[in-house]
Image 1 (tube, rainbow, N blue to C red):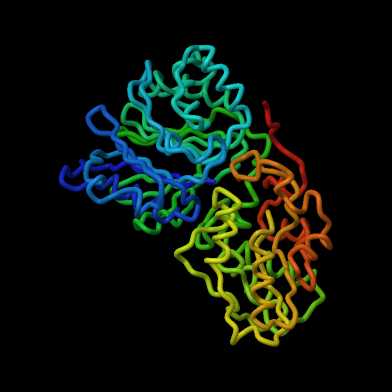
Image 2 (image 1 turned 90 degrees about the vertical axis):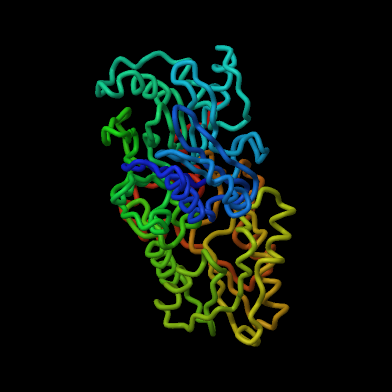
Length: 464
C-alpha cells in the first residue's frame, strides 16, 4: 500500500519558495499512514525533473534544504509500503527515467500489477533497460515500446501523448492509481476497476490529486471529485482535459481501504471511512450475544468500530490500551521480526481500567495474528478477568494481488485455521468476526467492492 500526491499550480512559481514541492511534501506527510518505508518528491522545471527520495518517514527522508531545490509548478510525491519489488533503495518512488519519445518522465503508483512478469519480459525483449525491480517502472518503459492507440480521439494538445498512454494502460493489468509528469503536464490515471482510491481537489492557486482527502485538508484544498475507473485526467497551463480508456464492467474498490488502510477522516469511495468503520462495529454488535463490562479498541484503526459496538450495546467504551504513536503500523512493517518488536513497543495496557473486568476488544482485522496474540496476553497479564476478541471484518482467507503485502496463504491464519483454532492460538476467551453480510451492510453500493481477501473471488487473474 502506498500514498500518492500531485499538484499543478495555476500561477507562476516563486523561485525563492518551492510552493508546489512544499504542497507535495505536506500531502504525503498527511498520507504517512499508507507507507513508512520511504518517501520521495519530484518537480518539473525548465524541461527537467528534479527528484529527492530516501528511506524513512517523510520528516526523515526529505530535508528542508533538499525541498528548496525542487522548483517548478508541477510536483508529485509518494510514500511507500512495498509489494512488488521489495523495499530496496532503487525502488523508492517517484521513478524518473529518460524516455526516447517524451524526454524525462516521472511516475508515482499505488497498487500492484498482476501481469508484471509478462510486462517485464516484454520490455526486456524490446531492449528496454529496467533499473528497478518494482512494477512501477514499467509504466514509463512501455511508453517507448507501444504503438499509438488509434481508437482514442485526443485533444490537439494531447495528440502526441494520449494515444501512447492509452496503449500502455490497456496493456497493464491489476490495480493502479498513478500520477505522472510528462512534458510539464500532470497526469492522473486509475485502473478500469478502480481498486485504489484517487481523488481530485482544488485550491484557488492549484489543482491537486491524492490517495485520500486528508491530504487535501492539510493544504486547505477542497475535495472536488473522484478520478473514475478507467479515466485519464491531464492538467497543464491550458486547463483540464479528461479521457476514458476503458469501460468498467463494474468497479471493484478495495474494501480493505475502509477496513484498515484509509485514515478515518478521509472521504474515499463516496463516504467517510470513519462512518463505515463505526457501522461495522454496530453490525458486529448486532451479531454478538455477549455483554462485557467494558469495550476497548485496539488503537487506532479499531477505534471507530469500538465506538459503534459500544453505542449499539450501551456498554462503556474505555481506552484500555494506550498506543505509542511514534511506532509505525505493525501490519505494514516489512518483516515478521519487525512486526513482533513493533507490537511490544506500540501498545501498553491501562491497568486501572482493565483490572478484574470482562473485556471485549475490538480490532479491525486479524491478518497474521501478530498483534492479537500479544494484546490478549498483555491484557491478561494486566489483570483482565476475561478477554473476548471481536473483529470488525470477516476472516482474511485470500492473499491480495492488488497492492497489499499478503503474498501467500500461509501467512493468513484464517486460510488454514478454524475460528476456534485461532482463538486458542491468540489465547482469547472467545473470538468472533463480523460476517461478510454485515460488512457489506456497512458500505454504500456493496456490489462495487472487491472482497477477494474474504472470499477468494478475484476480479483480475494473477499472471505469471
